[in-house]
Amino acid sequence: MLALFSATSAGAEQRHAGPLIYRVVEEQPAGTVIADIRRDCGLASNDTLSFSLLADKARAHFRIDAATGVLSTSKVIDREVPCSGQPVCRQTADVVVRPLMHFVKVIVEIVDLNDNSPAFPRDHVTEYVSEATLPDQLLFLIQSAYDVDGPEFGVVGYRLVGGSAATSDTFRLSVDSSPAGGFDVRLVLRQALDRERRGFYQLQVSVIQLNSNRCVVIANNDAAI
Ligand SMILES: [Ca+2]
Ligand SMILES: [Ca+2]
Ligand SMILES: [Ca+2]
Image 1 (tube, rainbow, N blue to C red):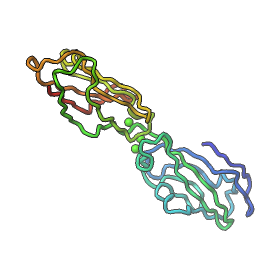
Image 2 (image 1 turned 60 degrees about the horizontal axis):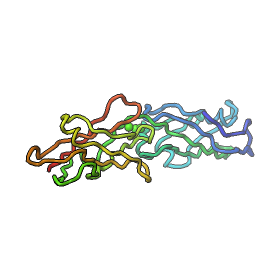
Image 3 (image 1 turned 30 degrees about the horizontal axis):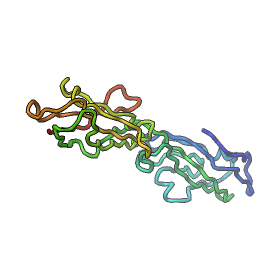
Image 4 (image 1 turned 120 degrees about the vertical axis):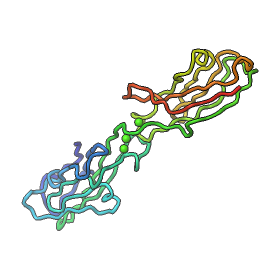
């Protein structure tokens, strides 16, 4: 817990230097304790005070015990709902302490877990390639896979998997970083095609994630010649 906060004693005119900042991991059970707001505000435990959250939006994720000032989760928080694909997920709450009428801004960072797999927009694509296509030519663009987790647990690469030796001799993937973020993924022809010898290839593209020892095979691409 990082508290950017300077108040140390109770008092009607108490002022806070900044928000209280906490972290909680997503997908924890409802009721997971985040912070003791009374303690972190320096309010005496024997004072008769009432704590509440100001906005309905905050109550969607958090609850506060009116008597103790303990802030906890009000439900299982799925980080991907408010912060799909975002590197950082911060939710705010305003706590009011009565009868002092202290207003305390609280920021809670929802810590990501790698609890989603990337997915391509389509799981099967058929493309047509002329047998007159020259080797080393970029063929079609493969639409990027998307992972709703943050970038740390998202897509870090692509590769061709499976297929016969003839297939990997004939095609390879070109994977470049895109200026807009993400990747530009294209199939490249490695050697000349001969429709009379083979008129159809089935390729499989997999996504590579960090913190995963195995590839996630999530798409097939067929190339008909
Ligand atoms: Ca989640
Ligand atoms: Ca996640
Ligand atoms: Ca993921």
